[in-house]
Image (cartoon, rainbow, N blue to C red):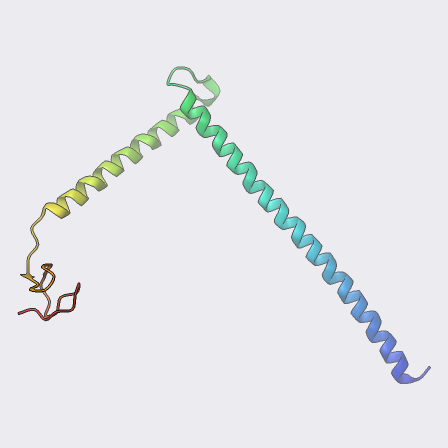
Length: 124
């Protein structure tokens, strides 16, 4: 066997081994991705189950084992409601406050710049 034939055989063997390893890695990555996707679906199911349970059971109806978790859920719901109310109050206060500046002669918006940021007209 000549030198070139021997090198060709070795190169083919190396390529074959590399291709096999690449296939194994790709298969492993596909399986890992499928496992992660399935775990996400499981988490969604658990979350939906928990939300259903929290909505279906009132204050005194929950078993003692989950009473502290339900109390934390209710506390979080109350805190979210308070924060939303404070955000709405802040937005209403901002919209009720009078704006300072000149009225744009083209679009009627109030601004204190040389050019209207809404329509680009020069302010007088």
